[in-house]
Image 1 (tube, rainbow, N blue to C red):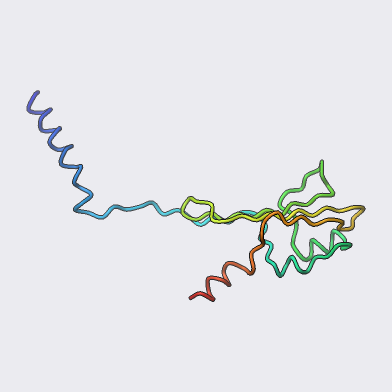
Image 2: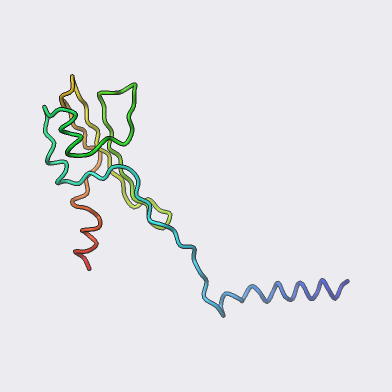
Length: 122
């Protein structure tokens, strides 16, 4: 029994240097994009006084339809790479009787589509 324990202990101790002989492999983590991406070009298309349907044509439907705040539309976008939040943006629009009355840019908007940015750097 003692020989078995010594043998197992020796095998476990030898595994501690196992990673120096073989490269370690990291898990692949997907790039996760969530929400509504609103670029600066898209934001420039919306103006105070526009109707809800005009805003929806320019930006798309809001991320969440909140029955308690029907006159408030939230556009939220986040980008996560390798398990870390790389960036997020938030745009909130307020309507008064179907007309856009207020725009809150909570975070800076992305200048262009991310795919176009990656191609221009390549």
